[in-house]
Length: 415
Image 1 (cartoon, rainbow, N blue to C red):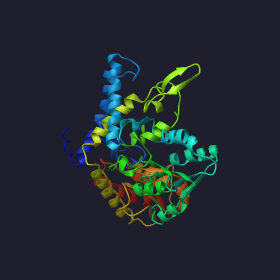
Image 2 (cartoon, rainbow, N blue to C red):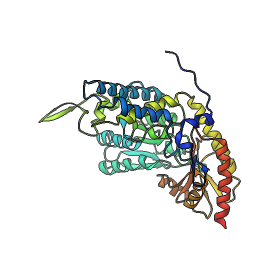
Image 3 (cartoon, helix red, strand yellow):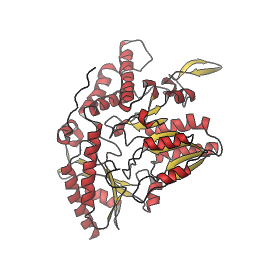
Image 4 (tube, rainbow, N blue to C red):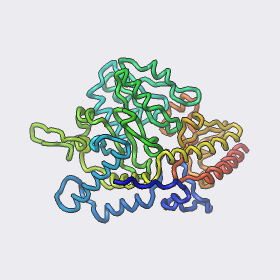
């Protein structure tokens, strides 16, 4: 099968595919959407694919032999194969559909964690983790008597590899780490972290929610045991997420939820679980959402994923250069090389909420708060921060206009 030629990434052309971006807000301010770390927008191609699903082929999957069920099942499983190909999984049955990254991490914490961790075992996290990659492990530790440890950061917001190696031990059963920090933008060396963890006998889960939408992801190269991400952060619908797991591990795990679809047989005396991936997809799955995610992957495959990261880095570099000119403004995280398209900042004496509200009135959708990373903000000695996060449809013109708007907002608040 011939490989389709990639399209040059031109955000001005791309934007035409996104109806939500082609509007003005408040007093005819053009909308600049800079909250992609939280959730991205959807192109017409994804929206239409979901509409087509509901209008033409929707039925429950794997439940009927009628035409609609067979069509829906085929599209649903085709989306699973698209995901497997996109992340480099060896088999489609290593891809489990969930409701999102949070669901996927909790699935591992219960189905794998409860069966494999014991009192005294250790779970190693980092200070830059999202709450979704902290709380499930704290809950697991409380259930089984394990201990959670945190790897520290360097002064410039990178993972402290010396501290990581020092805290790895023969008691470490699991390392759970984000591929990219949703606050600092730091890109972590997942392959190296995985190698070191495996040498210590630990398993590895990667929160890839901020990585898969923005760069080439090859789970075979990472060699991590589990990886998780969400559809809504990569142009797809909300309500759909992915758990990738090595087949042997998934086969060894008990089901997370019980119900329809996840069984092979049920009697009054008990049940036997089904084969992968059905074993972990109890009940009616997110059918239209999965099909929509497949359409999102088709859209992203038009481009080189490396080009998306390069574009976002260009925007982040321009942003950092502009922000550095504002007195009293501190940029969080590393320099541009180990950073993705995320820039978070604070301004001395000014409320992040006030800044966010006022730049919103000028058309810029940014984020203010702790970004579900309270331990990180505690470590940095701040309560919250402002965050801009980019994607393939953002432009340099938007960044430059944002710099002017932010300058005006800071001057106004200081008065």
